[in-house]
Image 1: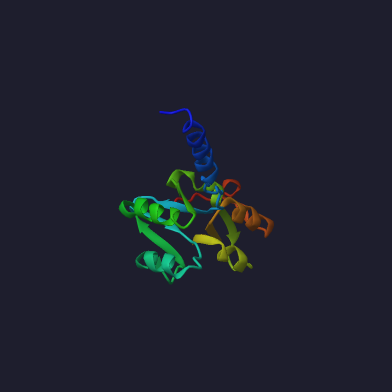
Image 2: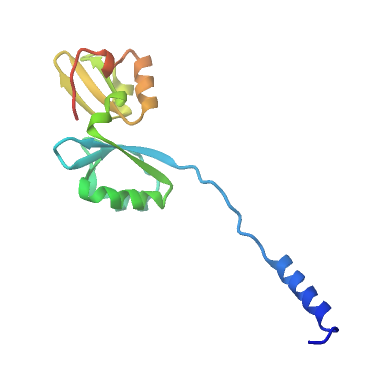
Length: 159
């Protein structure tokens, strides 16, 4: 190789390096979804509004329109997690033994519309209604609306 060609090669190498454009990186905000394990039912339930039709349509087979929630069999939950991850949803599985922080109790026949709106499940227990809330923030907000955390209530409950 001649000495005369070396500067040209060095110049071309520098030019090629300057032409390289790095792909921008970004951190996408994800929406967290808690999927609650239903004990002895081989099922996970969650409540989430999806504003993209393609997301809802993919999950439609598991949607219970009377309860306004998704009921996904245990053997399908991993597939649902993978699909939702593509749309920036992060599914957290909550084991049946770990739901207490998400549960609140409210006396029956009292105002609970806002609590119900953010719940995944509710059921009557004596003179009370037990709500499983979508997330811990919803449970805290329910307490601000005169609900009692399940841990502080004299009620036993398992989902």
